[in-house]
Amino acid sequence: MEEKITKTIVQGYFKKLIDNLHVDVAIAGAGPSGLVAAYDLAKAGKKVAIFERKLAPGGGTWGGGMLFNEVVVMEDSLDILRDLSISYKDAGDGYVSIDSVEFASGLTFKAVQAGAVIFNSVSVTDIVFRQNTVSGVVILWTTVERLGMHVDPLVITAKAVLDGTGHPSEIVNLAVKKAGIRIDTETGDIMGEKPMWVESGEASTVENTKRLCPGLYASGMAANNVSGGFRMGPIFGGMLMSGRKIAKIILKDLQ
Image 1 (cartoon, rainbow, N blue to C red):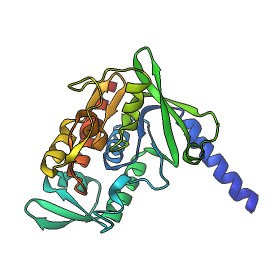
Image 2: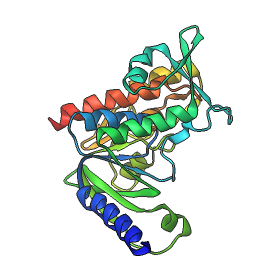
Image 3: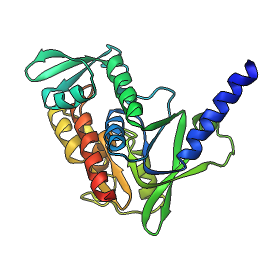
Image 4: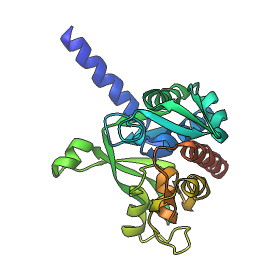
Protein backbone atom coordinates (compact mmCIF):
# COMPACT_ATOMS: atom_id res chain seq x y z
CA MET A 1 0.00 0.00 0.00
CA GLU A 2 2.83 2.42 0.83
CA GLU A 3 4.40 1.86 -2.58
CA LYS A 4 1.05 2.36 -4.33
CA ILE A 5 0.44 5.69 -2.56
CA THR A 6 3.90 7.01 -3.38
CA LYS A 7 3.73 5.82 -6.99
CA THR A 8 0.33 7.46 -7.48
CA ILE A 9 1.57 10.81 -6.15
CA VAL A 10 4.76 10.77 -8.24
CA GLN A 11 2.98 9.74 -11.44
CA GLY A 12 0.16 12.24 -10.94
CA TYR A 13 2.50 15.16 -10.28
CA PHE A 14 4.82 14.45 -13.16
CA LYS A 15 1.91 14.09 -15.56
CA LYS A 16 0.78 17.58 -14.50
CA LEU A 17 4.28 18.95 -14.95
CA ILE A 18 4.87 17.34 -18.35
CA ASP A 19 1.45 18.49 -19.57
CA ASN A 20 2.31 22.08 -18.63
CA LEU A 21 5.87 22.45 -19.92
CA HIS A 22 4.36 24.65 -22.63
CA VAL A 23 1.25 26.70 -21.87
CA ASP A 24 -0.74 29.53 -23.36
CA VAL A 25 -0.40 31.61 -20.19
CA ALA A 26 2.05 31.27 -17.30
CA ILE A 27 1.01 33.24 -14.22
CA ALA A 28 3.47 34.06 -11.46
CA GLY A 29 1.59 34.45 -8.21
CA ALA A 30 -1.77 33.03 -7.14
CA GLY A 31 -3.19 36.21 -5.64
CA PRO A 32 -6.75 37.38 -6.34
CA SER A 33 -6.02 39.06 -9.68
CA GLY A 34 -3.99 36.10 -10.93
CA LEU A 35 -6.67 33.62 -9.85
CA VAL A 36 -9.48 35.56 -11.53
CA ALA A 37 -7.39 35.88 -14.69
CA ALA A 38 -6.65 32.14 -14.58
CA TYR A 39 -10.33 31.35 -14.13
CA ASP A 40 -11.40 33.48 -17.11
CA LEU A 41 -8.57 32.29 -19.36
CA ALA A 42 -9.12 28.62 -18.55
CA LYS A 43 -12.87 28.98 -19.10
CA ALA A 44 -12.05 30.41 -22.53
CA GLY A 45 -10.15 27.23 -23.35
CA LYS A 46 -6.59 28.40 -22.78
CA LYS A 47 -3.95 26.25 -21.08
CA VAL A 48 -3.04 28.11 -17.89
CA ALA A 49 -0.43 27.29 -15.26
CA ILE A 50 0.04 29.29 -12.07
CA PHE A 51 3.29 29.19 -10.13
CA GLU A 52 2.87 30.18 -6.49
CA ARG A 53 5.90 30.64 -4.25
CA LYS A 54 3.99 29.94 -1.02
CA LEU A 55 2.32 26.71 0.06
CA ALA A 56 -1.18 28.24 0.05
CA PRO A 57 -2.59 30.08 -2.99
CA GLY A 58 -4.65 33.20 -2.32
CA GLY A 59 -2.00 35.88 -1.93
CA GLY A 60 -2.57 38.42 0.82
CA THR A 61 -6.25 37.65 1.24
CA TRP A 62 -6.13 34.98 3.96
CA GLY A 63 -5.36 37.31 6.84
CA GLY A 64 -7.90 39.98 5.99
CA GLY A 65 -6.98 43.26 7.66
CA MET A 66 -4.39 42.80 10.43
CA LEU A 67 -5.43 39.14 10.89
CA PHE A 68 -9.12 40.05 11.21
CA ASN A 69 -10.20 37.55 8.56
CA GLU A 70 -12.68 39.78 6.74
CA VAL A 71 -12.04 41.65 3.50
CA VAL A 72 -13.95 44.41 1.73
CA VAL A 73 -15.02 44.59 -1.90
CA MET A 74 -16.77 47.36 -3.80
CA GLU A 75 -20.25 46.64 -5.12
CA ASP A 76 -18.86 47.28 -8.62
CA SER A 77 -17.30 43.80 -8.39
CA LEU A 78 -20.41 41.89 -7.33
CA ASP A 79 -20.81 40.28 -10.75
CA ILE A 80 -17.39 38.66 -10.35
CA LEU A 81 -18.21 37.43 -6.83
CA ARG A 82 -21.48 35.94 -8.09
CA ASP A 83 -19.71 34.34 -11.04
CA LEU A 84 -17.26 32.70 -8.61
CA SER A 85 -20.03 31.68 -6.15
CA ILE A 86 -18.43 33.63 -3.29
CA SER A 87 -20.89 34.84 -0.65
CA TYR A 88 -20.84 38.34 0.79
CA LYS A 89 -22.60 40.60 3.28
CA ASP A 90 -23.77 44.15 2.64
CA ALA A 91 -21.56 46.66 4.47
CA GLY A 92 -23.37 49.80 3.31
CA ASP A 93 -22.12 52.78 1.29
CA GLY A 94 -21.43 50.67 -1.78
CA TYR A 95 -19.27 48.01 -0.11
CA VAL A 96 -19.64 44.37 0.88
CA SER A 97 -17.62 42.25 3.30
CA ILE A 98 -16.41 38.70 2.73
CA ASP A 99 -14.92 36.05 4.98
CA SER A 100 -11.29 36.07 3.84
CA VAL A 101 -10.94 32.29 4.13
CA GLU A 102 -13.91 31.74 1.83
CA PHE A 103 -12.54 34.42 -0.49
CA ALA A 104 -9.08 32.87 -0.85
CA SER A 105 -10.27 29.27 -1.05
CA GLY A 106 -13.17 30.15 -3.36
CA LEU A 107 -10.93 31.93 -5.84
CA THR A 108 -8.49 29.03 -5.79
CA PHE A 109 -11.16 26.36 -6.21
CA LYS A 110 -12.91 28.10 -9.09
CA ALA A 111 -9.63 28.66 -10.98
CA VAL A 112 -8.69 24.98 -10.66
CA GLN A 113 -12.23 23.85 -11.44
CA ALA A 114 -12.13 25.93 -14.64
CA GLY A 115 -9.01 24.05 -15.75
CA ALA A 116 -6.07 26.12 -14.52
CA VAL A 117 -3.23 24.16 -12.91
CA ILE A 118 -1.56 25.53 -9.77
CA PHE A 119 1.99 24.56 -8.86
CA ASN A 120 2.43 25.70 -5.28
CA SER A 121 5.75 26.05 -3.45
CA VAL A 122 7.32 26.82 -6.82
CA SER A 123 9.12 30.13 -7.39
CA VAL A 124 9.60 31.95 -10.67
CA THR A 125 13.27 32.94 -10.58
CA ASP A 126 13.79 34.24 -14.12
CA ILE A 127 12.11 34.79 -17.48
CA VAL A 128 12.69 33.31 -20.91
CA PHE A 129 13.49 36.15 -23.32
CA ARG A 130 13.72 35.38 -27.04
CA GLN A 131 13.59 37.73 -30.03
CA ASN A 132 12.63 40.70 -27.83
CA THR A 133 9.64 38.81 -26.43
CA VAL A 134 9.02 37.32 -22.99
CA SER A 135 8.45 33.68 -23.88
CA GLY A 136 8.25 31.80 -20.60
CA VAL A 137 9.37 31.48 -17.00
CA VAL A 138 12.18 29.77 -15.13
CA ILE A 139 11.04 27.82 -12.06
CA LEU A 140 12.62 26.33 -8.96
CA TRP A 141 11.34 24.80 -5.74
CA THR A 142 10.84 27.59 -3.20
CA THR A 143 12.69 25.61 -0.54
CA VAL A 144 15.72 25.23 -2.82
CA GLU A 145 15.66 28.95 -3.59
CA ARG A 146 15.42 29.95 0.07
CA LEU A 147 18.20 27.60 1.14
CA GLY A 148 20.46 29.08 -1.50
CA MET A 149 21.31 25.66 -2.89
CA HIS A 150 23.18 25.60 -6.19
CA VAL A 151 20.52 23.72 -8.18
CA ASP A 152 19.67 24.52 -11.78
CA PRO A 153 16.01 25.35 -12.54
CA LEU A 154 13.55 24.17 -15.17
CA VAL A 155 11.83 26.16 -17.93
CA ILE A 156 8.17 26.60 -18.81
CA THR A 157 7.55 28.18 -22.20
CA ALA A 158 4.45 30.31 -22.68
CA LYS A 159 2.75 32.55 -25.21
CA ALA A 160 2.01 35.07 -22.45
CA VAL A 161 3.46 35.64 -18.97
CA LEU A 162 1.45 37.43 -16.30
CA ASP A 163 3.12 39.06 -13.30
CA GLY A 164 0.71 38.60 -10.40
CA THR A 165 3.40 38.68 -7.70
CA GLY A 166 1.89 41.66 -5.89
CA HIS A 167 3.78 44.61 -4.46
CA PRO A 168 7.31 43.59 -5.60
CA SER A 169 6.30 42.97 -9.27
CA GLU A 170 9.09 40.41 -9.35
CA ILE A 171 8.69 39.29 -12.95
CA VAL A 172 8.65 42.78 -14.40
CA ASN A 173 11.73 43.53 -12.28
CA LEU A 174 13.49 40.63 -13.95
CA ALA A 175 12.47 41.87 -17.39
CA VAL A 176 13.71 45.40 -16.73
CA LYS A 177 16.92 44.57 -14.88
CA LYS A 178 18.10 41.41 -16.63
CA ALA A 179 16.70 41.80 -20.14
CA GLY A 180 16.90 45.60 -20.27
CA ILE A 181 13.33 45.85 -21.49
CA ARG A 182 11.73 49.28 -21.73
CA ILE A 183 8.18 48.76 -20.49
CA ASP A 184 4.94 50.63 -21.14
CA THR A 185 5.03 53.20 -18.32
CA GLU A 186 5.60 56.96 -18.25
CA THR A 187 9.31 56.42 -17.63
CA GLY A 188 9.82 53.13 -19.43
CA ASP A 189 10.89 51.72 -16.06
CA ILE A 190 9.24 50.53 -12.84
CA MET A 191 7.88 53.63 -11.13
CA GLY A 192 7.26 52.17 -7.67
CA GLU A 193 4.23 51.91 -5.42
CA LYS A 194 2.96 55.02 -3.65
CA PRO A 195 1.61 55.09 -0.06
CA MET A 196 -1.96 54.21 0.83
CA TRP A 197 -4.88 56.07 -0.74
CA VAL A 198 -7.73 53.62 -0.97
CA GLU A 199 -9.96 55.26 -3.61
CA SER A 200 -7.06 56.08 -5.92
CA GLY A 201 -5.45 52.68 -5.41
CA GLU A 202 -8.62 50.79 -6.28
CA ALA A 203 -9.01 52.74 -9.51
CA SER A 204 -5.34 52.69 -10.51
CA THR A 205 -5.08 48.94 -9.98
CA VAL A 206 -7.49 48.47 -12.85
CA GLU A 207 -6.14 51.35 -14.91
CA ASN A 208 -2.54 50.11 -14.67
CA THR A 209 -3.45 46.55 -15.66
CA LYS A 210 -2.00 46.06 -19.15
CA ARG A 211 0.56 44.53 -21.48
CA LEU A 212 3.95 46.03 -20.65
CA CYS A 213 5.97 44.60 -23.55
CA PRO A 214 5.57 41.71 -26.00
CA GLY A 215 4.61 38.63 -24.01
CA LEU A 216 4.60 40.29 -20.56
CA TYR A 217 1.57 41.52 -18.61
CA ALA A 218 0.91 42.75 -15.07
CA SER A 219 -2.19 42.72 -12.88
CA GLY A 220 -3.17 43.58 -9.32
CA MET A 221 -0.61 45.23 -7.07
CA ALA A 222 2.18 44.24 -9.45
CA ALA A 223 0.58 46.53 -12.03
CA ASN A 224 0.26 49.31 -9.47
CA ASN A 225 3.90 49.05 -8.44
CA VAL A 226 5.04 49.08 -12.06
CA SER A 227 3.05 52.19 -12.99
CA GLY A 228 3.30 54.13 -9.71
CA GLY A 229 -0.17 53.63 -8.25
CA PHE A 230 -1.23 53.98 -4.63
CA ARG A 231 -1.75 50.97 -2.35
CA MET A 232 -5.18 50.30 -0.88
CA GLY A 233 -4.97 47.67 1.85
CA PRO A 234 -7.59 44.92 2.47
CA ILE A 235 -10.09 46.01 -0.19
CA PHE A 236 -10.11 43.77 -3.23
CA GLY A 237 -12.62 44.95 -5.81
CA GLY A 238 -9.90 46.50 -7.95
CA MET A 239 -7.92 43.27 -7.77
CA LEU A 240 -10.85 41.23 -9.04
CA MET A 241 -11.54 43.66 -11.88
CA SER A 242 -7.83 43.76 -12.71
CA GLY A 243 -7.80 39.99 -13.16
CA ARG A 244 -10.83 40.09 -15.42
CA LYS A 245 -9.39 42.97 -17.45
CA ILE A 246 -6.01 41.32 -18.04
CA ALA A 247 -7.68 38.06 -19.08
CA LYS A 248 -9.55 39.93 -21.81
CA ILE A 249 -6.34 41.67 -22.96
CA ILE A 250 -4.40 38.41 -23.09
CA LEU A 251 -7.22 36.59 -24.91
CA LYS A 252 -7.34 39.34 -27.52
CA ASP A 253 -3.57 39.22 -28.01
CA LEU A 254 -3.51 35.42 -28.29
CA GLN A 255 -6.24 35.50 -30.90
